[in-house]
Length: 273
Image (cartoon, rainbow, N blue to C red; front, side, top):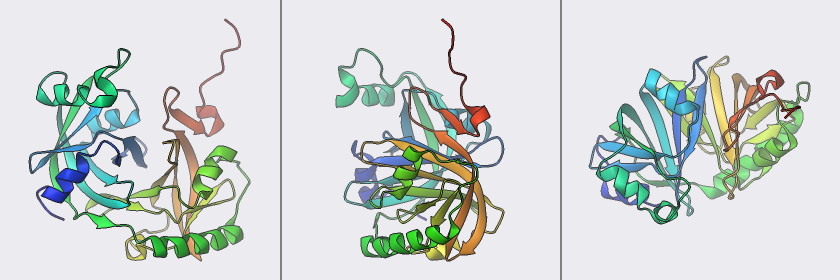
């Protein structure tokens, strides 16, 4: 990992069309991934992002400031790193910069209300996703998923399974390592019924070897319309592919972000007005 943000990384992080993810840890020790579009470099050793809605990750950061991040572009270039939250601001040059972006400049209903600041702990070089390896890994994930399918709890809805089943849909695994949280692209991942996810170790199989059975992990799947779902669970080992037993399902999308599995975690429906 580099200690400073190079020119290639700065240019990539400045793109408004990228996808960025922030990895935090929730109160029960599960990794948590949040989709961001606004993560940017600030100088050589700091990062910022603009907040316009409130999710769980902001509270997690206040309690546990160390986090991981990953950014990926439409042409499948990506980078990742680690950072430490330091403070927020509601005015200043970064606040003005974010709110003058084309998407928000003339929006009368909402804008960025808070800017979050981070010290950089480390950042990778910009790299390219190996699409041929991903294609073969996706095939093997689906074969393994067929043999490992479990449908007892109906944890993943039909929509969630479709997001995970889409071969071209970006997917990302987050887990704890000796050096902190790590985010790994796992586009090859597939649903194994409603209660498991299967991830064949191609590409990035060496990194997946760091997982030990019983480890808490999370996996986010999203599509090109930025619809997404996040599963949290336990890594149960490798049986043809690496398997994740789903324990929780989180809907990251506004306006009703929140846990949707277990069912008791769902918001109560309004029956009377």
